[in-house]
Length: 143
Ligand code: DQA
Image (cartoon, rainbow, N blue to C red):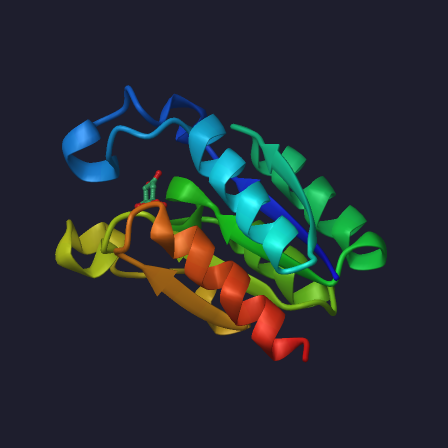
């Protein structure tokens, strides 16, 4: 099984960025732990991060023919991007929406997700474990 982890805008700053909200782990350390988990689950995992909406969309398109599932933290584009929603709807592989923080316990503008209706499921509020739970969900859904 092949899984791609996509992180959107500002997530390259994890570790330094609002640690009280997003924790102190860097994106690299989150990815390293996911890679270990993936190895144990016999999953081929890869990672992509971009601060640009178009880059995220191009990567989703590419994933359609190369991956069995995607874990997506779209950052703030979650709440604004119809283009990202359309890209997820267009590809036929499952996409799991993840967030480190519990977006529903935060500002009202974070309560709405443009992408949830076209995702296979949503995991939020468990910090770095949100990614790990998403990986487990994709693997068990593939069995
Ligand atoms: C986030 C939540 C979003 O509202 C925010 O814009 C982010 C990170 C999270 O992982 O908690 O950039 O997706």
